[in-house]
Image (cartoon, rainbow, N blue to C red):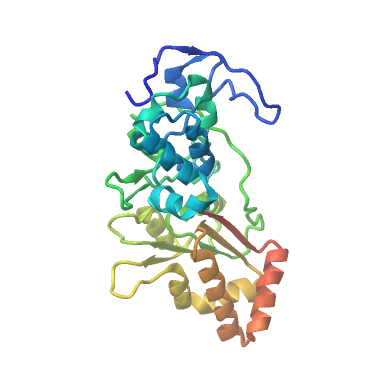
Length: 333
């Protein structure tokens, strides 16, 4: 056993730092068992920070492990720490496997200092209370990717959710989203939601559908239509009824990659008419890396090419839309 702990041992938690609160009793009861802390609270999958190694140094008695830990904990060892831990996304548990002698000597009282708490995960609601009464839908991509390490990196929450049997009861909370959707029913709306970014737009679109409102364009993007084309049949059905104009982009189905910002050009005239001439709203949701900037630049180009604006004028128009709440984004890393 890596940490050589008795899973049934009882732990009673006390506050020893006024800036650190005890875990919520709904998450972890007090007292709890070691097993409960390990399965409900400690995040073994987190990539540890330098402070993790600084703490381990105090318990290391094996000379080789102690020297290596001291190196990772030092400012001079920043590059080595990055290459060992941060770049390959090595988890706290995998680090302890590499420092197995030290792991056995960690006092149980320090485990709450060593392991971070599992953070709550937020997902956009993908259903409409008007169209799906009594239900709440979310769209979750199961995280799984490879680094130079042999074992694939997986998402804690998404993997857990995917493994749950049907009809499982899980703890949730609901809070307001960051986007405020337009309540003017007849105002046109343009939405850009690649991948799971389409989730909040499904909620908004079906809100409008429940009221019999169309006037909506959705630009959706994914790698391949056969793998991650979320809600394909729904979008097609709404388009057939004239309640939605749907424009998909499949980035990996041709030699040259095609993204949502590229597909926006196909409907440049309508986007310009709806956004500029009719004062419509423009929403963007999804990954925060390059997509939001690419989409904003595409909109600016449309304003320039369809409206004869200069680059500065297009940029000012987008700023004006933002100040009026007609250009909103909800992105995540």
